[in-house]
Image (cartoon, rainbow over all chains, first blue to last red):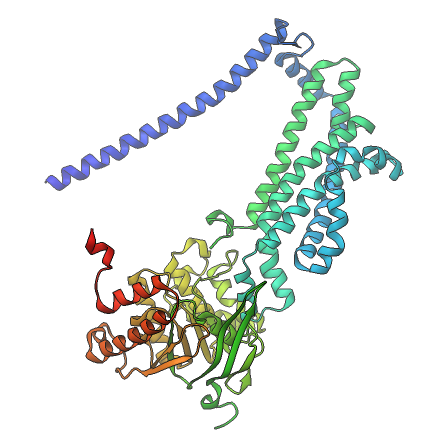
Length: 282
Length: 287
């Protein structure tokens, strides 16, 4: 009898706390959405009221409602799609070449001392140069604006991927290498079944960071030397004094960057099902 | 004695073994003039003061370390590289985190080019033996420490090694799990009768498992004593209080204490003498 009572009261407690948790979760989401709404309202007020905060003037900053209208206009014009397509093709080309080259080099350099001494030194010299600083030389180096922009994207993505791959290879537990030897792994098996999966989480991190820097580099290149592309669109909006489109361009760049990094992470996690159980440490 | 007969095949012979490490400034001699033979199908435990080179011995037999003197013979072949004839189980499970339990165990068979169907049968069989048949698709990180060590054991056993080298394999496990693992190991050894060299720092474990217990000297390691364990098999917990067991334990601890006193390791000495007399450390009685 008493036991039943205890069980019942425990069950009630569990139910109450579950409801309580749900309410708290709901409250947190309300707060999150509310905070974004407040920011938008403040922004709207600032540009409509032509606020001046310190020396920043909001009078030329388009209000969120204006940006929204511009977005609706743009969705109906075919021009935006050619801008988007141009940027996406450049990102895809530059990033893919960078990923293939940087992963291959990273694995090679991380694995063989000869490759480390022969290849890493020139790369280390080039590494501190920001991709943007390559723009003038890239224009001279490549025959078309298109290829020089792809090159800048490539440079932007290359180093984060290379360094993370390298780090991933070097961080593989040496005991696992010994175990592979004990169990008679050939060089190919060692590479395919130990080094590549061992470095994979780090490679995915590198790809994700590289995607961010690739967008950063491409947008700059498009602003400087572009025809078409979302960076060019944003800069053009400024020169044509179509101010809502500046913010629209910024928003599109942000969304594209977030989506492409998110896609990479999603694919990465799909390819390493072990990772969610505690990474690479066992 | 035929060439492929098990009588020749499974013996470990260590002759005049010497192993040194040349670090930056210091030259460390881990093992010097070690002679030891483990008979076919024998279960030998190796005890020794900490840092005496027990693990070095296992690494050398596994073919991961090159001796600076002497020779190592397993079966009728000189050890010069890792090989499938020797299974190795380290203290740390060192499973591949990205491979499922099944793939981890399968790894050695795959490297030897065993066809897929055969691999499947062999892995399923060993999974059953270590009681993990329901965990084939799990990743190592999803298993407890004891289960991981079972996988580690299975990964070595699935290759049906003629010689099993174990370096403190159960040291990191809790007492209950360790005992289960010891029973499991004895059970499998009873059926397969491979030659086992089992390094441990746990005197009870060494005696409980072995046909013969070897006590090594402090560094550079040499064989100090060899004690035959004349206790009947299958071993049960009952033997832990058997007079023969207690006497062997006393002898092992005396030898270890002697070695520890010779060395400059006051902490290790305290630990061992406390175990020997079964007393609490002095500091505790003062307070």
